[in-house]
Length: 143
Image 1 (tube, rainbow, N blue to C red):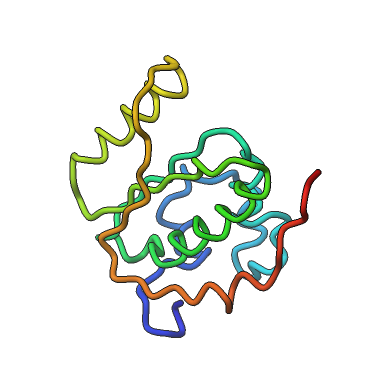
Image 2: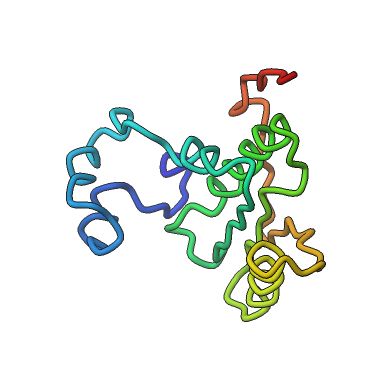
């Protein structure tokens, strides 16, 4: 993404500017992210088939909203393979309080067992994510 002109933050920048977000051990990997023992997709997939709501702010380019969008699309394949067509959900918008409604509905459904709609997968980013270039695998078929 950075090579394509995005202002996405790399590992060293994240650790320097936001050390409170990460374990001190993360700094061992920031110069060579290929050596990370886990990636975001894998961590999100570990949640399957439980509820997952991804919330992001598309106005903060340095967070890599295109990447987050693509990762969430990819993890949907894993959730669907496990029989969960309702997750993950995504609320990805630029600076807005309306994500509060998405979060509230999600919490009401998953924690309070209320019958409310959590059918949200939205972004205000104009993303053209080439899924075939990144999702070059098929999930296993479970009996």
